[in-house]
Image (tube, rainbow, N blue to C red):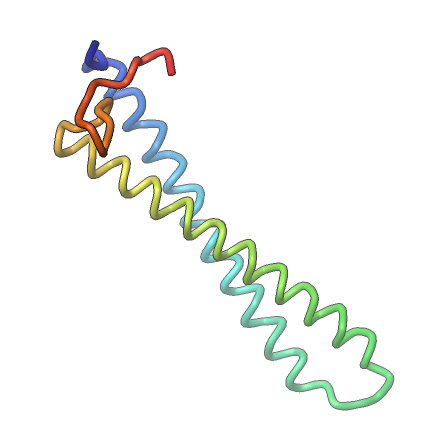
Length: 102
């Protein structure tokens, strides 16, 4: 049973909203990582070693989170493409309809 057009439009709106939010999150993570990198490069004193370690951890965490968010963005873009092509609700491998309750 194909997905009703009203449901497809609702899914599309949800995906667009999520994409917008994720783009903002990724932009913030990029800024944070750049700021953290600049601060680490500018500090050279031994007293700041602990701060540098914490900054490096935060930078690594930001990069990992950013990669995860970018992967989610790719999945959203793929789903939006399938909606545009009219293939949403169909198995990508078999072409069979997917139960909307799933």
